[in-house]
Amino acid sequence: MKILKISLSIIFLLTGFWVTYSIQQGNTNAEIVQLNDNDWDRGYFYRKQLIEIEESNKQLRAELSQIRQNIQELEQKLADDADTLKNLVETKVKLQKFTGEMPIKGEGVSITLRDASYIPDEDHANQYIVHDRHIHRLVNELYTTGAKAVAINGQRIYSDSYIACVGPIITVDGNGYPAPFVITAIGDQEVLEESLYLKNGVIDMLVQDNVEVTFEKNSELNMLAKEE
Image (cartoon, rainbow, N blue to C red; front, side):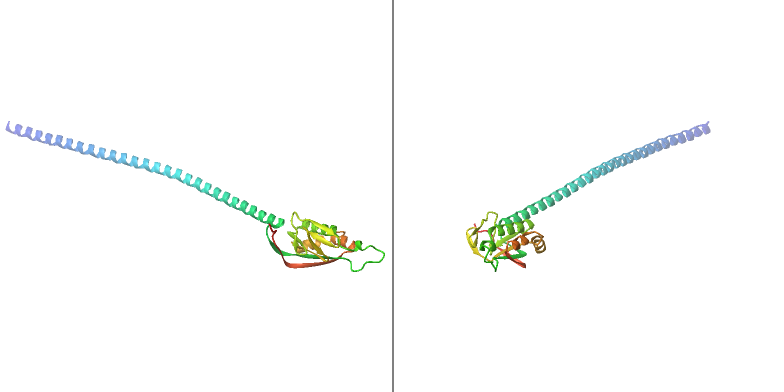
């Protein structure tokens, strides 16, 4: 009987020990599972944040690319506007030089017109002198060929200038000049010369009208601006 009690005591003791161990082990496993769940939650949270950051960076890169493109377009527009303004200024300066509002200098040509040195007795002297029509045609030809400025005996011709013949002299804006008449023009020397010496051109016409013509190239001519 005593042995039976001892045996039962040992069995209950072992059973209690086993139950207690099982409970402790179960709690330990539960904690491990809970820890793993927390780790997974944190990992998911961080991955989600990373994805959101990558999407935000992608959007920012797209916005930056658009801003750079806008800046380039603006810079190009400013450059085009600057070129346009520069062209307008250059055109304005050219027009001012052409109208005489600004002084001008450059290479060019000089054409000297003289009355004929010999007049036959049977002919009228009027047929052997330089007339305003000769100067008009010569000046018009020079401008048509690209002359930037023209002067007669040093007096610059403007858009509103008036050339007339008064007896043996030529008047330019009321100022009289006797022969010889020196017409100077600023422009491309080769082009001006070629146009003047065309067959049946201005030089031929002058020679046929008994006008003595001398042509010369000038490396630099200066013409003043129109006085207000």
